[in-house]
Amino acid sequence: MSSVVPKNANAKYYLTIAGWIVLQVVVWNIPPSGALTQAGVRTIAAFLGLIYGMCLMKEFALYTIVCVILMGFSGAHANVGAAFSAGAGGEIFTLMFFILLFSATIVSSGLMKNLATRMLNMKITAGRPWMLTFVIFLVSSVFSIFLNCMVVIVIVTDLVLAIYRKLDMKGNLWTCLVLFGANVLGTLAMNIMPFQLVVSSMYGMLGAFNPALTYQSVVIPHVIFHTSFLVLMFAFVFLMVYITCKNKVSDVRNYKPDAAIEPLNREMKFSLGILIGYVVIQIFTMILPMDSGAGIFFGKFGLTGYSALAACIALLIRWKDGTPFISFETLQKNGVNWFLFFILLALNATIGTMMSESTGIIAWITDIITPVAMSVSPWAAFAIILGAMCLLTNVLDNVPVAFASIPIIFAIGNLIGINPAGLLAMAICAVEVAFLLPSSCLNTAYIFGKEETGFVKKGSLIGFALPVMVFSMLLILTLGWALQGMFLAAM
Image 1 (cartoon, rainbow, N blue to C red):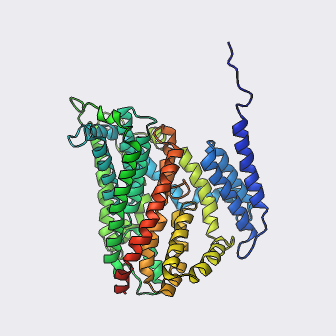
Image 2: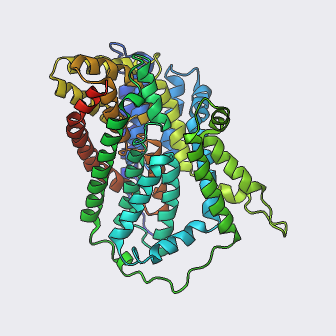
């Protein structure tokens, strides 16, 4: 007997597609104004179509490919082929590819499954969901202070997913929000140490306007602010997860620890060795003087190089019986995240172009924000600049927004009588509160990409991100303003 298909089975789908097309056609044909060029208007049209697709459509390959095709006709790229080359040619694309291969090396050995069992069996976490949540958040936060948070979040996500599979908690809201919380705290923790690459690079660009404005000059207030911010955000995120999910953790409470835990086999031990070596060499590289011979040599690897090297070492190893430790087929099966790759393809093709002078987008936004900030009180200017950065970073990629804002930060800081380095310290926080959409931040895109596992829901992530954003901005505008005297004293 054949099933009866409702006549309106595709009505919602085609209505969503129609809205997607209309949005892009309308914006595409808006006349340029001010500093905004025609290429800029069309780039915005393609990007809005991408955001619409992220929020309302499941066919990620469809809306990302169309986005890149539109960029080929926008005038910002020579043709469609050039737009695809720009999308796939960015360093971030390569970085993510090799981080995922590295992650697959660890996961494929069964190490994460074994560690998940051990974590669930610990006295401190066994049958105690909120202690387990606290430990996951703490691990993500502490390790991200010293390592690149993207690596930490990938590893922590693999570990947490292994815990969820052990507990068979697919579809549970707690699983989704714990992953989100680990991403939030790991991302914010990276800002504490000003020698982290992105943070030190931003201070370096500010120093181009005034050589006295270096992170060394404000290192103490910087660390105090970002540590205080992380502690308060840790408490808020933990409390939000607890309030939202306190009745959804019975599977964790009822978990019975295994009588015996499987010992680490040779594959797991070797994976653990690669993981430890991967962490140690990154810390070693950070503490080396950048202008020393060793610093220059190891600095050339970067995160991409270390991830690629770890994958090569794994592929190189053969056991005594001639069998490989891991094959590329296994890495490919466990390491390819098509959602993430397609999203990065579209983001690289659009956001990179938005930063270009040929589109006029940054100059257009600056022309809107700067006069408003200059016409109000110092605190209001402080709030406008940081609020605008937080808003933009949750739509655009946070790194380009951060670097594009530095000239404005220097000008506004001097205008309202605060240390521009102090304003930059707050701005670093504002641009790292990038959790609303996959376009906000690479870490967030990675978490959204886990929707296919069944443990993450897009709507839950967006719904939880909104109060986190609001609280973050209130914290920056109060705590950050209160600490400006420390930054002025450091001038």
